[in-house]
Length: 440
View 1: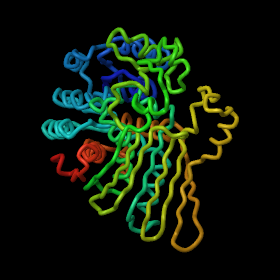
View 2: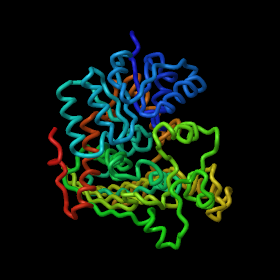
View 3: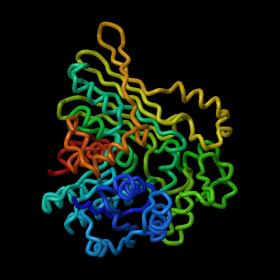
View 4: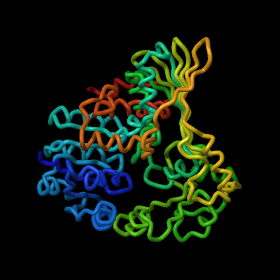
């Protein structure tokens, strides 16, 4: 059986797991044939360093973004993997389909209704396969929730509360880079929350119908810094004495991967990875609250905060037989390689707190004792153990999928409809009938 041929467009941080999967983990069924990016230095890093050192693989054909059509013609990939900046997902995805390729797209599928409609129309016209990579679906803990709801343990679900917390390491990072502009990312309601909205669609086996939202920039940004008495500003952290004292600044060590991909590649595209989270030009929200009504009439309240002391999520399902609660801490307080002294906390103290934060599923019936439900956490790969399972599904395939983990372009569209509706509602102050935004 011939191997499938893969090309990757977009060689920032998100492409890594796909390149490794095609070139190493699943190279018995996959062949990596090309890399493409607006920045040739990032392509060169993955081609000449990453492939050699981490995949034991020879360099592949390299192309710039304006050579995308040429790449398809010369290397003849069966599948194009799109891991570019969010606002260009639709362009490369649609063009790949028009040139006869299937597409694997990073989430979010795109950032607005017009681009979403273009993907839907192009898929209908070409008939090509279009996959969206929702790795959180594959996480064992999220799979367990799907199984429990499907089992009927809660009865009929009437409402959901979903709270997501981003910490001051990961959360702040969205305000340092290209995500800080809604034109690029759709804001956190689309770039980040597409994960969460897809999970709810999948858990409930339904789609959003009506969305209302409120949101604002309340913590990051120059205006908020001034309110807290911060008077010294910098545009980026590199070579800044002010940034050296800022716990929110990104400090990049020479010789690291982020140094190679961004600091050493700046002269090719003038993209600065280490902008100040308290600088000018940020137009996305850091506090958001959303109300959703689904087609099956379940209601959801959702919140996201991007400046919390720990990172994770809490979900509760209210049903006609009881309440199912799920609490997950993905990261406690700060990353292990950061200096905890700026938080007034020793490493051993933080580690003790992390140990207490174990993912837990509890079902509370109307009468009787709460039930703590156990599950196998799997291989502990990225995204709660979901990455490895997702990649196997993408590259090897899985005909046995009773829970419907695989997500296509319709799932991708339905997940961003909640975020698109939220963005519209925050702008207009009015509820949005989201299914009227797109024609399937």
